[in-house]
Image (cartoon, rainbow, N blue to C red):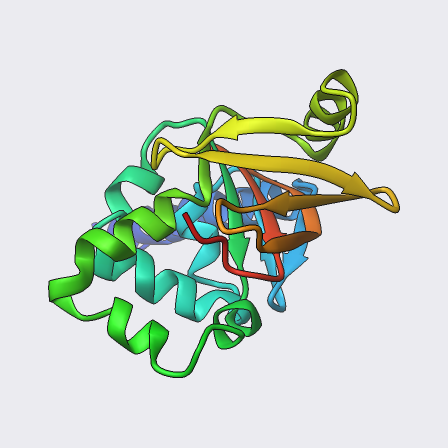
Length: 189
């Protein structure tokens, strides 16, 4: 009886390890893009990947403060233009701290949702829209406002409502619920 119990436990451990190895092998087989020093897995959603990027800690904190974690973990699909920590650092001193205050949640939510477009648009899709629009395309953001897309030197450039420009620095970071394009400047509605 003792040996049967030990054998059953050993078999369970082997099966568990086999399952872990199969899951690890599956993730390793995925074509990932490194963002902020971390691999972004196409089988994970936007939030599951973003929390691993050391370049997006400010964005993740802002998404949490705005209460958008569940939305961006949802089925989507979403196209997210994700500003880096350096992009947030370009804002006037104190802006991020002010936006993260609970009383400024509506403003923070508007700024963040201005970086999100419904649907999954690759860089090629964005460039095709620009070509079809004779040099520029208009996207309707989840915030309900327009975002202008152009192309300069083969790179996707976003122009916000205030005329500010943001360059896509890492394109086509595929997610299970959309795509992320890393940008170098915070877009302002």
